[in-house]
Image (cartoon, helix red, strand yellow):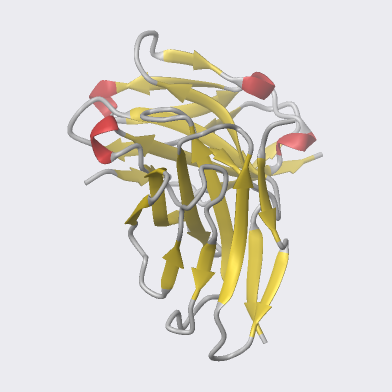
Length: 114
Length: 112
């Protein structure tokens, strides 16, 4: 079965500083990986996705993520955080063999200090 | 604009009552999903449907029911058998295998 772990429940970062959110997954074959962002009381917005090919993926809002098969990781990064990046971030893994179901991590809440 | 519409935004349920959450999409997506989100937890899959008139149970289907009579619509009924229904419910849709899911803005269900 697929599983996703986001080790950090909360992260606090200063505005303008860099941000890295960790995601580790467990799946036997090559997974499809996604990062979503959720503002309070809202749905989830797709930041970026990895299916195959280049392991460094660019997304919206200046985010990028790197797929590392050897470490079963798909960490999300942003070089310079803006106050509007304060939100909850979810990593998700899917697989064609699983009927396109997604398994989500528990989420990381990001707080941005002025 | 294409998207997913969930209604109502807030819903209250009395003891012993069934309630239905609406989810409509105009993205022409084949697959639709219902998730439950509890504070501090990720999303857990309740039911999903990959095609009209067909649906499968997810990880936490007990106490819930769905129907998929039209491609655009995937309503979720929270029955009285669901003893802890207070949560944020999210509906999503996808064009197909391995494609990203697009989410609605959610319905928050509370118990009176």
